[in-house]
Amino acid sequence: MAEQAWFVDWYNRNEQRNFPLADTATREDTSGSVQLPNDFLVDLSWSVPIEAGPDPSLFHLHSLAVFSTGITLNFGYNGDIAAVATVPVTGFEAYSAFKLSGQGDFSTSKGAVVIGKVESLLDTLAGAYEWDAVGGLLSARTVIPSLEGVHKLVVKDAIGETKAELTGVINLLPGRNISFEVLASGDENDIRIDCIGDEDFLADCICNFDAAQANPIRTISGIGVAGNNFIIEGSSCIEIQQITNGIRLVNSCAEPCCGCDELEVIMTDIRAMKDDIATLESLASQLQAAIANATSVILASRTQN
Image 1 (cartoon, one colour):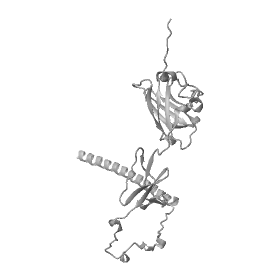
Image 2: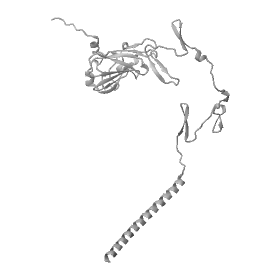
Image 3: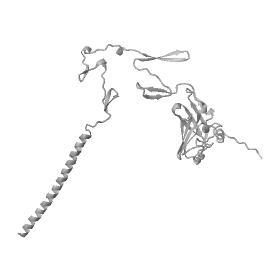
């Protein structure tokens, strides 16, 4: 009988073992009720920044959300989600790679996860499950330190709000009256920003009036401003709020102008008015009855004549 040779490729081999999870990972979730099938995850390559000095033993499978239409796969660091991948079920092909999107402190991380089969996972799991470093520890070789460098340039305005987050090739362009100069110093390069003048910016200011004759605001409602600082304070129900280039007056509460005594007087008058209305209604009814009786008598007298 001829001998048969079996050739097992990388992904197929990983379907039979924990990898890309560590050999010591139990694959059991934190509840201990389910175990991740070996043929689901078959490879992982995740490049993470090393500025914070992450501990390789704290990277792990964080959680799975399994639905009939797709699977959300989260990888974590020390219990927090650090990267997310989405695996669609419709049209899925075995050994497909899916992009990892970094989250939180690992937002600049990049990578891919390879999924072997989804049938066993869909047959045994449905809903959301979580893993810790005991059950979902990643193999050390799957997490790769990224090369040192600038991962992202954040542009903010004067009040600290982020205007743009730039990656890739970034060019610094000098604007009007600004120049850049690159200064080499050993292995480092410094960029010096200089302000330069031109005829427009060096020209004297020509004013058509005498500044001493200007008529600024010197008082507000007859009140002078001492030390160039005019103070506005609120009362018990008026709150002063600062807004851009101004202030806002806010009525934070409402104080009634009448107390219980004044309210009692009003209620007494209302009750008296109600009594008067009832009396008028009674008199109206009596008057209507008298009119009806008089009409009957008149009609009867005409009939007799």
